[in-house]
Length: 178
Image (tube, rainbow, N blue to C red; front, side, top):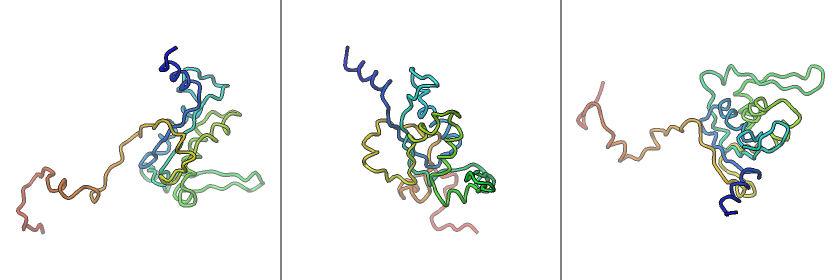
């Protein structure tokens, strides 16, 4: 058996670690991408009763982007288990309190509702910024592609690139628009 074949088999049956950058990503769409890696449905050996999923490390969860006015409209539910212990929290309030909680709750709700759900969620590692402990980062073997590109701010472009950008009107340097 060749070495390439052995590596392929190890990647099929072993638990891989994937890195996902949540910067400027919609957590609802990101959860759709993360869940197959947690439950193992992207592998050819998948079975709903087997726990063959991988680890997913999500970074930059502080910089997620909800579309439209969902920061003010989306509500997250929590119950303490006691009578009268139900609370509803707006997305911006939950994100202010814990920047990892929106992604965690979204992925939890997208996972299959069975006894394996909490074990699969335990393989989801979320960090509010790009500072990941070396003990976790050394395990990461692949990176998941972002769903949409992160736009660059205008002040992040070099001055030379701004000056060489094609212009619709070629105004003189001393021209002032009123």
